[in-house]
Image (cartoon, rainbow, N blue to C red; front, top):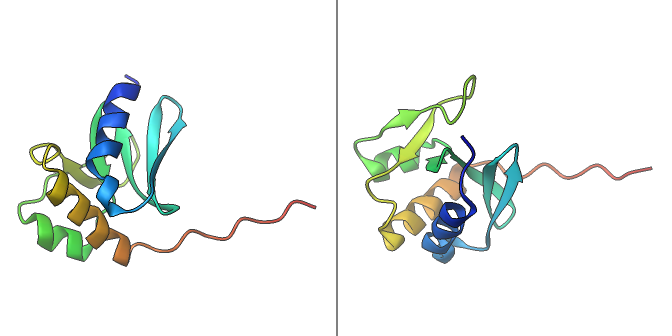
Length: 108
């Protein structure tokens, strides 16, 4: 099942305090970036955040799930998705540990 654009817009609005948040549609689901750095996925109208040690400590009782078949488990965010400040802080904390995006290769 593909994610609704309305849900994606809601999530982006919730975490706007964590930087420049963008989402890119891929096969009916969405990849979510902050300041150009990939930090999460929206699949089946659920928010998944890439796992980090700091994020795990911040969340406390973590629920992990795979966003799609064959994917590595991520933090599934359900209960606190409407808590704008908490969600923005989780993204800010996670971004510090996630790798910078790889430079794009120049076309010849």
